[in-house]
Length: 198
Image (cartoon, rainbow, N blue to C red; front, side, top):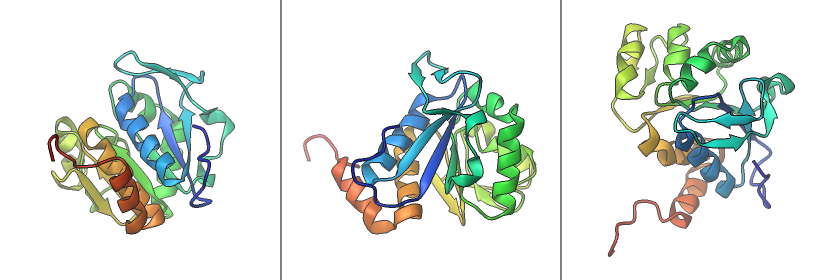
């Protein structure tokens, strides 16, 4: 992703994009972070910078997973989608970083099916989280306190439900990184919550 003209922070975010991801869940978050002045890299999980989503939308990532150190990012975000989520789960580099990150108390965000990845690794036991309705049982079976809220913030763990809540997740990440005032500025700039005719 292009670096914003005016950076609001030196903090950085990695959005892990695997073949078969849900593209809006990744790109809406990236867009909101860009508008807030947060450098965000699309990190391709696989052998190519070209990534095709579950809806056959193809785009170019910024960097290959094998070429970066995920620990250097202040926050890592996992989009959902099928087979994107299983492709994330199949990557040892991804699961190793999720384990390291959550055990160290470092920020992780996941949306839709993707919260099932750290849950299946036993990393969310006793935490509050949400996911796509089709994956809530996975979280519950792994000892997660499940919620049907659009975005759930449990310390440095931030989860969301799906494509329609991706902008909400992006705003929650801005608030986490830069504070409520920065999130409100972006919310106003994108005309968030506006209804036609109002």
